[in-house]
Length: 418
Image (cartoon, rainbow, N blue to C red; front, top):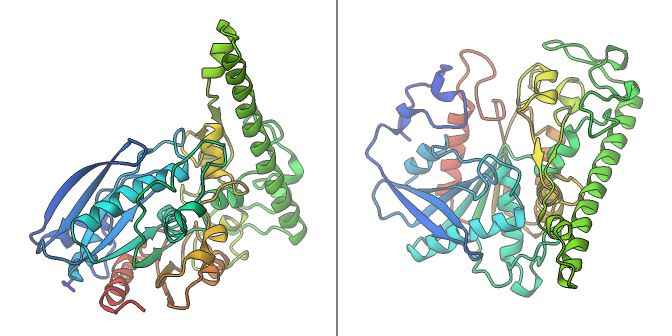
């Protein structure tokens, strides 16, 4: 592996999910490919290579974000492999993100890579990309007739007709259990009125000192009784949101049926065409982020969005802030979404490598235990690395977790598949 000039230092290049430019100072080529999916949508892929003769390619993709320069790409190239970085169709928005359709994006990239002559394809799922790739692997390994035919919202999806090449290996780096499960763990159940972001049930308020909250950097301390009631209330809120989404879809379906039956009135045509868009507030309140005694690890108090719970719970930045009924049910509902390790892991029977960060504020030790246990392969390995969710050092002077994870990744890529 090339010597990392930033070993042991906290630098700007290591503060996010993108690579440190100093680690890409060698000659490499970048080839863009615009691909058409099986449902006639477009997706973009960037192929990074050095020799142009690599036979192994490592794929990186997130269902709702596009980072064209993921931090593990330099390690992939150092291992003598090519790297494929793909953009999803729904970049930075939850309005169109249905995971079943996103599988067709993955499939287009996989089919193209096989056509380019790669003999080993490794899917590297980082954070939310892990659930996407686990879901893809599950469906690609099924007989076409056994694949999912409809999204949780009822939209037909032609996975059976799509070319879905199976990968050869999988790597999961800082995976969380799935977008929906992530939100189920983090949604604020003290909301009493979905139309009022300030409505609150004081007995369930996670940021009330009476319930055990203490502002960061100190750790809160919630009672076992509060935690149990809170978790039950989180599930109940997601159930209510599921019911609301289904009611919205049913209303539109009735209008479309009326339209087919000959009712061409303006009101019917409006209802038949209308897709309701909802604002969803208070989605960043996982108790484990504030009470460090729950699911203990090396993490600091706070979430991926920072230490101010009001900024992420009430502000414009947050998970699932703007949704449609379809995107809620497919992606963000911890009950209805198909894209979770709990639903897909048993069918992931290919060699798999899980790398977890000890200070992760989105994927906690119990989540990692569940993910690793559910994987249906006996050829699996698990390693723990110091770092936060993106592998940044937990303290000044520490070696970057990104570098440590990269070394482990190279070892895995050099080992033959089992």
